[in-house]
Image 1 (cartoon, rainbow, N blue to C red):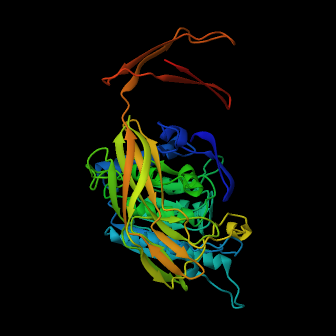
Image 2 (cartoon, rainbow, N blue to C red):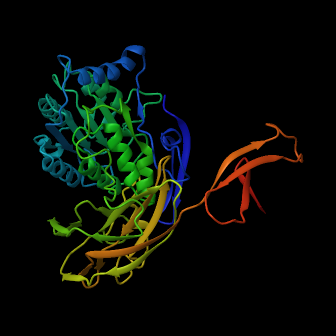
Image 3 (cartoon, rainbow, N blue to C red):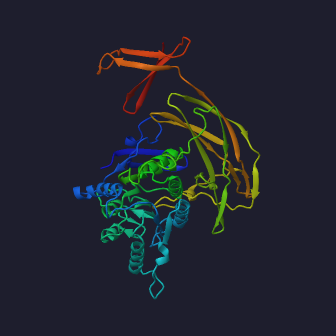
Length: 496
């Protein structure tokens, strides 16, 4: 069983969403932020035989046993019906996600086959959709393409037992759907990873030889989450374990509510070390941490040139290695992030923009507004009445830090691309310089003990504390303490 843990987020631009199945309490071990330090995987199944299956698969692939294969050389990328086969779902352009995933896999040398399930729609003589024939055609085409695939990516509407028209019963009905291969299956879809009280699609794939599965325990938010799916493949290094790639993708995400929600609901099923064959090529992190000297006090950032793709009369703008800014009702523009590591005890005080190059201008781009699809409801931005600013976004950059047991990471989010939806004008800033102000503490707590473990209400607490000052000067210190009772926090401070 996974961790039963409630986690909520709220933003002015999103309704309250909640997940009660998340790995956050296990994977995030340090700091207040939700950034996982551990690679977590769940072994799922309704009996001991099914629980053993993904473990045996991982061992077989690692040892190179006969009948077990995984080398990330071939992939099947499937996109589903935008509004479901029956037309009753929110419109989501799953083919756009699939095209982006395929492009990123091809760039890494993977042989990719794409399948768009609406292409297999069957009709009666009256011109109506023949549901039974359509499902059969999709099933036959899908399993005709699954043998010998190392990656299977599914982008479509989903529920616990199904993604688009690929149902768990279809998977269970196949004797050996992947042949000798043991693929990584990523269902970029709602709920297919939720297995409590039901046999999920995740369990079906693992029981039929998939090496590992990445799926969601809740309904996602599109198209923010499809953008993160493409980012995952962009960052997945050769021979990098799936669990490591998922962990680093989550660590690379920002504080945006939709990104945090993706991180909370998408989990690895199976061995998180699956896919590892030795020393990692390109390193173990997708954060692209700075190669400059440790603890830089100033940095220069060069933003890659943006790329424009026209789809159905609309321009989609991407920055290689960048992200998409999702704000319902606002233009869908790209942004960029850089990361720098500092020793664990360094305290980042401020980040100051000291120089930005002159803008590169353009005009005539037709950039669509962001639409967030929420299952079972209208597209979210249809209920928003937001007044657009003249230029979007309205800020130049922002920064934050997050901790791990070994280091503190500084993340600088840069907004180099600005769009005017009234004039279709564009401003793009390519070069940035920042000063980074930080302090290096000379004092650490070397001992902290209380005289008792349990106290009665109102009883005084005696604390024995020792400090080590490695500096050359005497210092005055303020000691703070926090008392917690349920959800209430009581803060006190005193001088020393």
